[in-house]
Image 1: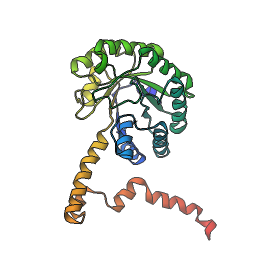
Image 2: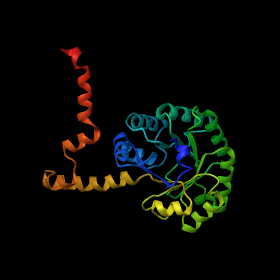
Image 3: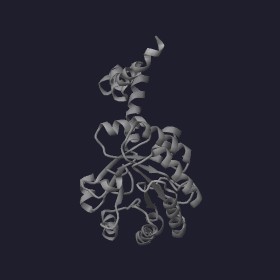
Image 4: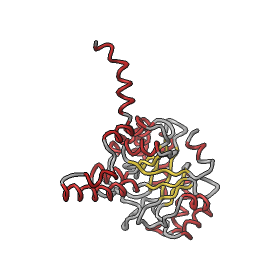
Length: 290
């Protein structure tokens, strides 16, 4: 089933945020139907930095290629602003399609460059016309008709809800396949956005722990009219919490013994990444060494 076909069906598509192949693999093993490759997650984990536009297109491309080599699920890729103007967007789309193959969605946003996390203050947005042009460039550049273009607006915090909804209408007119109205601040704002667009195009809800949007369960968001729900940074925040506990215990005790019940052992991690299967597969080629 293609991602486009899946979005026409119930239940809502729940996509956890990942930033590397191990997270993608574990999400697939947990039974998720799709992944969200988070630019913020890449910034947090690869750079140890905040989500303020530091991640490059090639870093996202590399992360996507590693995940796709290991995982067959549909992937929604956070491509920030497209890393420049409409011509840069076209190149970004081609890069990501090569890395991610089929069943891909590429998300573009209307912030200025450098952008910042959608739930931080102090954002700025480009003109509606410039963003519409980027969407058209993305559509023209895609080589696979199954690649979806997700148009995100950050204008709620900058221009207000009404302006943001008008912008989103223009992005739909430009050909966006999925709409993403970032950082809606109340359930009433979410309902206003859905009243205008639900049933016309799939809408994506972004759930950020401690962010500006009410944190609602996927089933409730589905009842409101959303088609996709992402939890983009939850994995990094959960592992960050666990890592603090791990390092504190190791520094205090000089051993990991106190944490063993909350850790995978060597056999456990090898089972997840498929070490026994890979070693067995390698035996097919051992004959030439004899």
